[in-house]
Image (tube, rainbow, N blue to C red; front, side, top):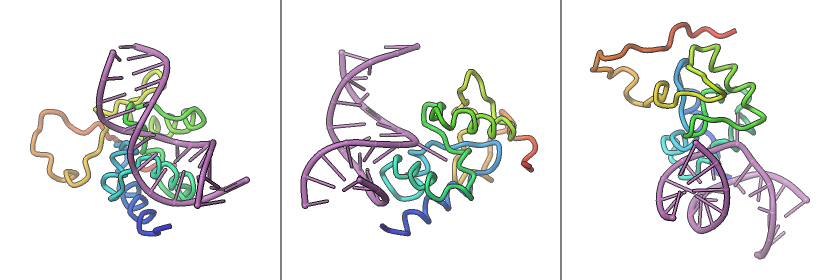
Length: 116
DNA sequence: GGATTGACCACCC
DNA sequence: AGGGTGGCCAATC
């Protein structure tokens, strides 16, 4: 397998700031791959030391086995979680625009970062 | 090497 | 608001 792929994905996932989330597809795109499934696969293999909880489905939902963990972690970071769902429109992180923020319409929902 | 499985996404009805 | 299908990439049996 191409270790480059794993590195790419790890780089993106590890670059997601607290209080924000990304979709497997988004991570894949920024990682240079076209398969979102591959992202989840990598996270499952070596995501143990990565903020994988900041990665969810594009639908805002999460896998059954992770539902408990995912939502819990996000909720601890200040992410809006409701009915077992996350507000992808509210916390969707945009790689490259982390410091752009030109519009002052709405501030960042991310409060404290330090986790555990 | 063939078939199946995954922490998925977009499309269509 | 929900169900079925094709595509994608790698690991596994």
